[in-house]
Image (cartoon, rainbow, N blue to C red; front, top):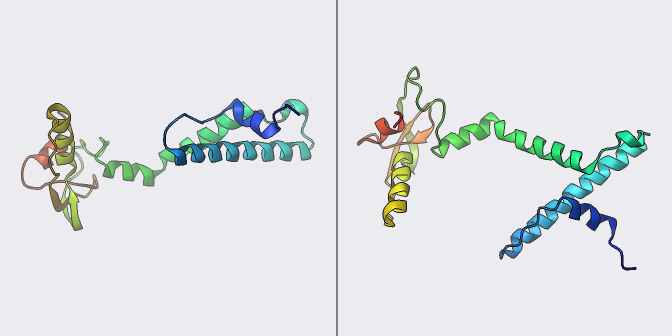
Length: 160
């Protein structure tokens, strides 16, 4: 035969594969490619069955763009934004002086976000790592764990 089948042709056009040493990740990317190609083919066949003219049939590149834009739109989900704030990333609430930043008790001990950022910077500069202190207090509006004693609370809520 000597030819390449259609599935491989479609996969080769927009492949996500990267050469890496982790075998499971290559398998994951291959499955992702196969899933995207199959989704495209289903939408193409569906459009053909609806007697759509050939110039209006979905193109593979357009399908990929729509798919990825739809997937990336989930990053604007309020629940995901709240999770990102939990990780200590800068947020609109963090520096807002109109909001009352009150301390609440957490059900279990959690790492202080400001201490974790400080220790990470210190480790990059000196190469020495130390443990992040754990506390049971959190800022309610920011939804992050912070040390109440010491400079962490004030440093986290002020721009430096």
